[in-house]
Length: 326
Ligand SMILES: [Zn+2]
Image 1 (tube, rainbow, N blue to C red):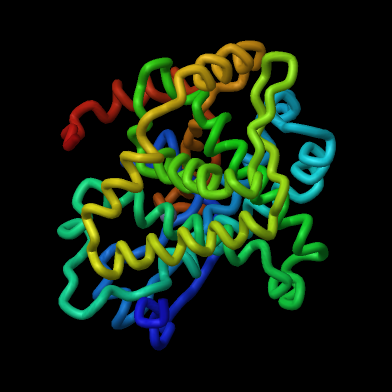
Image 2: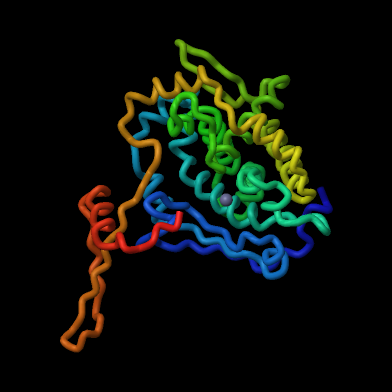
């Protein structure tokens, strides 16, 4: 809505860095991008900064095999689109999520920060809002006009396919049967996907297909799905701008928390054949200074730990004096 759009966009920047090592909250499982600050009043006055973690994204994109993808795509077209455009679609979605997504929109005058108004749903609403900005603007010829993609429609379709496949099915491999979705990003991927699936049902926008006892979600109408994402983006921005707790609670509890038990059991069963773990983690390089006879550092050697376990045991042996502040 016009009143929820930021009047002047200031100080937006996006940089890609290569990560040498991580600690604290970011290790061993890492974000792929960071947008700060969180406080909306600072964003409004001086803007925000986004950093993309380039080598992390690259590592994720090139790990694992395509077996799991083959298992969960509906058809060859979906598989080929993902193979050809999936990586670029992912990168652009992350960039749009961080830079345009988190940086966009404004609160209504007198409405407090979302952690006060939306409470425990603030984080998942904000992540969903940023995802929706990304999805909405990915499927747009403007990206081609800017020279970012060669075929905007194919990239947009790959992005929509991947998002729905993950939000309604594949992310469930991370949960045990019977568990609710708890993590903010996983919740938002489910409420965005499940809301779009339900609202598009009368026009068969996303079709639930059963074939040989296996379930697939196939997108029949990408233009209509784009419209639905736009509607939900408008609504999530309204919820944020107005601080509408009742609406965010209904959205998240209604679409983002409970899991379809039959589909979950099926996904876990179909995933059993694949070895790669549902979550990625990273080992940190050990940075070792090389000094000359005067004790000046002349170089840094980058050594790699043998494996995850030995690194964790090394940390616990050498740094266990550090306080646990969880
Ligand atoms: Zn985010």
